[in-house]
Image (tube, rainbow, N blue to C red):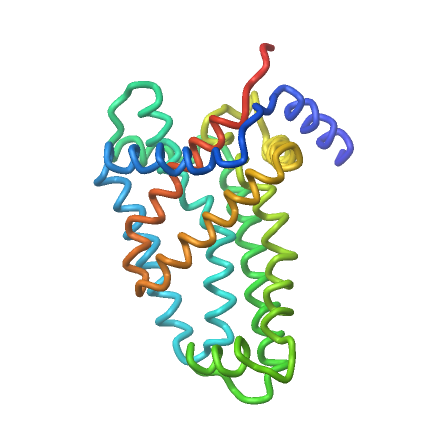
Length: 264
């Protein structure tokens, strides 16, 4: 049974081609994402506000347990692609010349099929796994308790008698890299195509194919996503109100720019 599913997913992935793009093309995705943001500002900014409030909730719950908060925020990066589903739908409607609104977002979140639910659950498990690994690492290897960002900065980031921070970053990269490769075009593709054309595993295979064929542009894209998200977090999460929907719309254009569907 698993072999049959993998064969079907491989066939689905082979139905897609990958366009050749220059290394700096991700900057163009940001430009087009910015345009989409301001063509549908209310539903777009509502997504950003929801993500910022979710971040604030994380901070409130783990405020006195920063060892948990550090993992929670990085886990948030893992699950954020599924939270941008409505933004992909808005950009898709704009690309077809339509006028997106709240109905576009409602339709995107309506469970027509279980693919996005399955993907969301898998990403939630991955995010939870990282949170637990991060918490276990920080509490297990840091001698003194960490209660706040200053403690984390002094006892982990700036610690001169160990490689705690670099090891913590490497642990995060070990999980984040395959998650990025699995989702970079997969979730927009699932929003764009019906279940008869693409399943979850086929979308993941397609996403990996894109990354393997374009390692340099996609590495730049990953760096831009991380840097802009960190800026949004560093502004007391206020910047996420604009940055989160901007990146969501840009991710749609990354998918449309990278992936072509071959004739049936």
